[in-house]
Image (cartoon, rainbow, N blue to C red; front, side, top):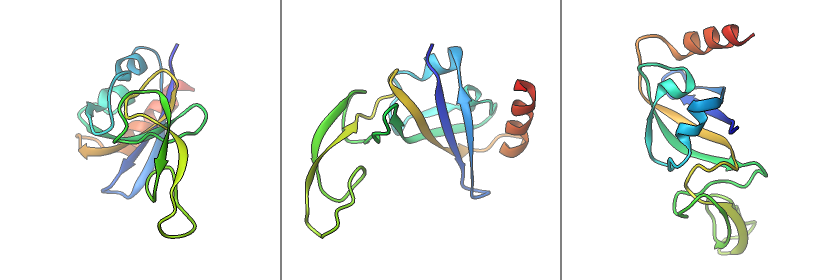
Length: 132
């Protein structure tokens, strides 16, 4: 069974929240790409819209928007996601993941684009108390 950890950024409050996505909600996210908007019901936020902004796989390799697919590839990078050079102009071959959510993805970063009726903090706290 696939499980993800979602890090949800709330720009209005300036806070981030971590939520676990399990079972059929996790399976519905497989195949989505960075930049796609999803319904907040997948993470327990009904009425919200979320945009996928990034993520990482089970080994910690970051996802890149410009690399198609869900597998890991080794590409030549200059200063960008996945590589921060010590000197200007330096390039290096690094392993990064593609822009598609796959079964080996562990963390998904999201940002709230459309607010719902209740605040995010209230909805996520009630979800945590139900799980315990």
